[in-house]
Image (cartoon, rainbow, N blue to C red; front, side):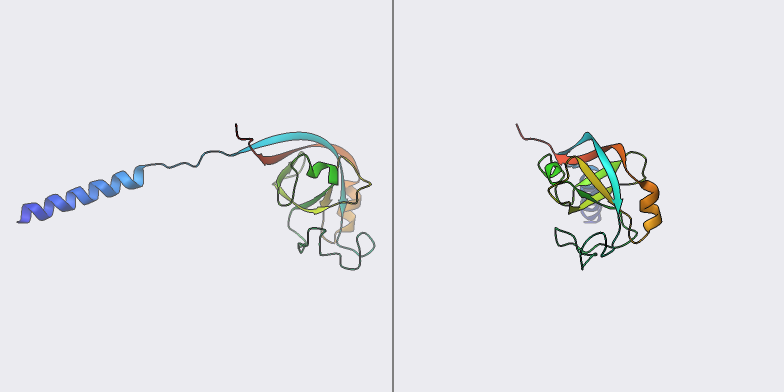
Length: 139
């Protein structure tokens, strides 16, 4: 009887080890695309946006200190849609697309700099490469 209990415990332990050592990695369904754009910066100020400067065109609430960008509407069609992850050359970390710009702008991003007007002015305007994550096309 004692050998049956030990044998079942060994089998159970072996099954648990096998179960937890199996790596079920999810398939990578994303790829990164690169694009050169004009980059400017903006702040949560009525003078730069509207009378509700912390609400985006997508309806999100902006929080100073969090990495967000706005994109020109032509970039939406290229996959830079709401909540897309974006890396901006020359800046650390990743940004989220949380706002969209007026239709008069093309091939442009606007980097959110909270209420730090000096940082936005210091950034100015420049051409940068960005990388953004999109879902891979299914074949």
